[in-house]
View: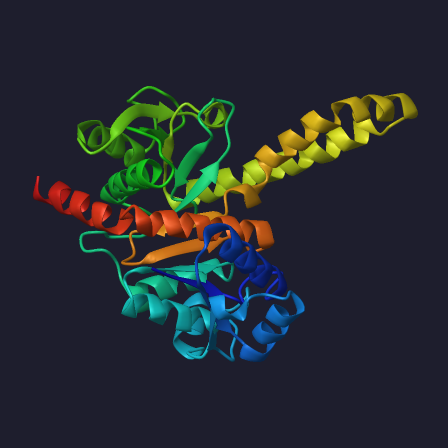
Length: 335
């Protein structure tokens, strides 16, 4: 198994990316291939006193930037760390690629360079979301890879999300909910009404019905299925609300000395709460449906987030997620 990391992708590359890789090497006892500008990678490994024998360095002089056009960047920046990493995945199916770089480029490159699993029409991003239920969170799919979808696409999202949740996150027989404007099966637009019927009849998932937006944080389903337009709005709204609440809470709790004193007593609980809200705890979002293990880390990933994304990648490959998805989709197509 080979872990391949885009050393140049993300807001804090290459420093935080390499720090996370060093932590992963120590904690998970794995070797890592770093793709990027060789001189910068070697310099950072030296500064951090890393065991260089645990790292393979693949030189890539170019970088795909956040504002680059995704398809043009993949086609024209052939010497970039992302393109070279994706090409390595294509050659070695027992490997996983992790990048905090341009999401659109990673999506386009995954299709153009790696290809889809046979039978999958569209790959999708599966993003972890916390909730108040004692289940450790939900998996939202699609998180933004496909703005426009057909009903069959969402059925495949549900199957892939269920497999990932069970194989990697250890949730046995996870429930699937369809994000909708009401819980009744008659609610929604043409897409969600059709998808509801298809999900109800799909024997590869444990369908729990519609889930309204207000019930998403309550953990009414293990997997939340929607098109990428809705999914991205949900994710960004959730992130914005969380940041706003933290800012408002901080302002109120530091308004005077008595509140500051009370805050000291609450500090352990607040730290635990912040940890639950921290995206770095979950690493990244797998791009499900492509014929290779690909984990998209947050653009502002720190070392901790990269280390946990590598853990996700190891579990992805160790548990045979690709083969299970391929087999399930093949059987579903035959029925």
